[in-house]
Image (tube, rainbow, N blue to C red):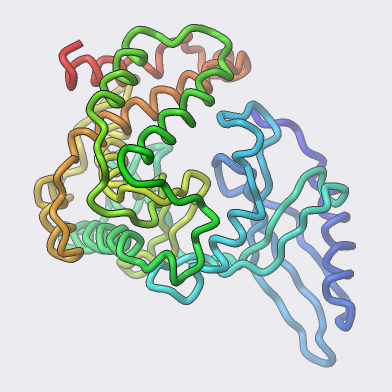
Length: 353
């Protein structure tokens, strides 16, 4: 459950803040904040109007700041400056992202750091309800579905083939040679799970051991989105025009993104713990998807199974964090363990546990 916010007070504070950022302009008016949906960060749409000399100006913007209710991640994870820097450096590359405009680290303005970016017009393949059963992708023709899917895969390929060093993304942290990449990842998710203050379930503990035992040196080190899924893409006229939600970004093995992409498609269809349903007809299957990715990147995908296991384990840990929120349990009317159920079952099936 989201903390109740005094949106009008925040609007007034923001309007005063904009007046300090636009000192040469006049008649600055900020419309009421509107929430478009849920995410790891708080996200609101804002409409700004002002006069620049004799000209009337208007911009549709998006403001983001860290969550104020239960945090899935350690507090340092919600680094607004890092997110801002990433988007700033990806702007005008082959990776489509919203253009960032302002970063504010002074917490006195809104109670926490935030950044503001331009709003990108389009629609997002939904996850509540999932695109497999409703929404614009569901209603699209077979040809339109395929076009959007292939464009999404091409976008992921563009992320992975970006020259991240030239783009100045070393600040994200570069793994050393050998198995350092996965050792860092496992340590990070250990830290997340430790926030639960309870023993790790046997299936998660066994999977953790399997991931470490079977770790390897990645063939490629790339920029990785970390949350590669259709639900984080803005679509306009059949093409991906913006990639959203970079909170989980890292430099590492790009196949980790592919494992997540495959797993999240499963998790929003046949892998749902409540009322599962078939995957949306008309979308290319995963064998075709990987073949297309290999063709456009000129890279052979060799460890998809490993990274699908990793993705399932990661998502299960995220769900255990959500289930620490008593308000979520009360609101959803689901017993603790319900949303992790299908992920635990998938891990048992994948690894024969």
